[in-house]
Image (cartoon, rainbow, N blue to C red; front, side, top):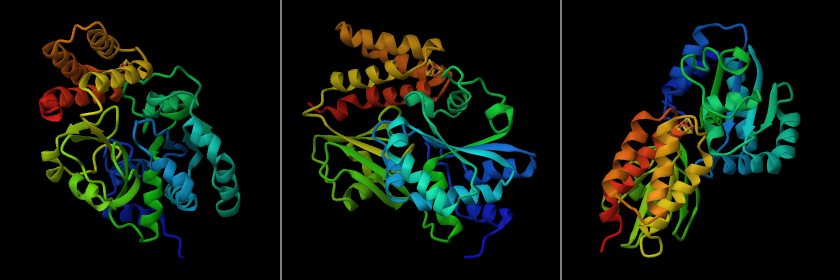
Length: 340
Ligand code: SF4
């Protein structure tokens, strides 16, 4: 197969309308073309395999089943940016430990000149945020950085840095080989018969995706779409109108007869309290206060909604913003999700 030039690869990525698969949905071509146009002497790159969003399994699936395709995609990114000093393959702990040897072998056999360094993520959910990833690699405090400067200008070791989700690199490999069919990997988990990772069209609705994967929802079931920490909640009636390609492409199914509102809320709050960094007041205090309302029997729906909206609007980073949006959706639809 003929190796394409940097420009040819960028044009193909642009024509494929690829958007990042880590949750932001930002155009990969726009981000990479901006970096390319600046002709930096040297940059860094990171492949984000943190996959901390609960219910998301796709990056692990790629590492297990599609390692040559992933490394090929990373090698094509290196063709576009040959001035890259190092490419960090940033993996959450269990992925690092499980796939380290296989990655080393595959690297040696297929792309031995790729300047790829494997890095074991030191923490949890928040470490997937791009500026925390940079801090983690630089062995700094695990909290988000203020922007600007953006990491595309001043990232790893003060150099311009590209960070993209692991699946994004996998899809770039497919684009380079003309095998990309406008699909993405969806993770389906929860109270359902056929959980797993499925590659389906970007444009598929939640209803179509569940039907195609033989996952039939009973009347008492509902979906959280986009990930367990930041995903929005959907009633059964909303499934047919809602594209499934939100956030990390994760669908978690709940059954309202086996999962009460307060138990679900408690689980989400405990997770977020354990993962937030405490840097900003809306997130730190807002999550704590909501948890207190639940555990002390002081539940106040109006106040909880106020806190969630404040989280969504004023938090310093995506953890608080995403959690706030998820809670607003949960509180707004509570009566439809748990029908009496
Ligand atoms: S939103 Fe939460 S995780 Fe993000 S900076 Fe604030 S306290 Fe830390």
